[in-house]
Amino acid sequence: MSNPTMAGHWYENDERGRPGYPPEAVALAELLPTAAVAELGAGTGKLTRLLLSEFERVIAVEPDDGMRRMLIPLCPAAEVLDGNAEDIPLDAASIDAVFISEAFHRFDGERALADIARVLRPQDALTLLWNLPGPTTPSIARLEQLLDDRGPDPANLSYDPKDLNPSLFATDQWRAPFIDAPFEALREARLPNPQTVSPDGLVAFFGSMGWIAELPDVERLSLLDELRSLLTADEYTRSWETRAYWTRVKSPKGPYG
Image (cartoon, rainbow, N blue to C red; front, side, top):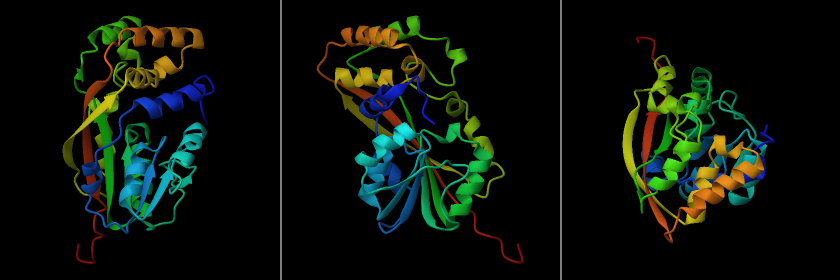
């Protein structure tokens, strides 16, 4: 269920401020345009829209009511389902590929991989994506210093309070469930993913961070106003890098191993 303290502004800021994904990330698994693909934890549909431009059938699975309310009108061609990665609302061996963006580290990895393997056809693909921040031009150092001064101790969060880089990703802990999972070795690509945003879009990005979104409205809006006052350029370029990881379900062993 949606967190009532975050109301609608969190979803809107997520959509306005966070980056999308480069088309190359979707191409890595070498799927046919006729493929049926599922996205788990689809959010507001940033990756979903890219999948719809590439594949014949796209199923977007999202457990959060507020996210789905934004996702459905933004991605009308997608089949949007309420569900989660540990209990995917799809039949066994019914999908050619599964995509997950900025979400796998939040799943129960072992359970999720078991159910992903169930819905995938033999030897079909799983792709995981994360966006990692790089420099912003022009510099936003003054804004970042304000966030350092006002924000919580990073040790008390599961992500960097300025850029959302999740600690479970940064420490590679997300890989552990793959050790005994029925998937081939993960392959990796690092793809440039620059984003050009207005000052308001940049403020929306920071407003989408959980610790800011959960502040009382008076504090939240005051902080966002301060951030906006430090942005004097007409637009900003953010040098994101998309980390893409892809694998396939292992071939079943025959009677002789």
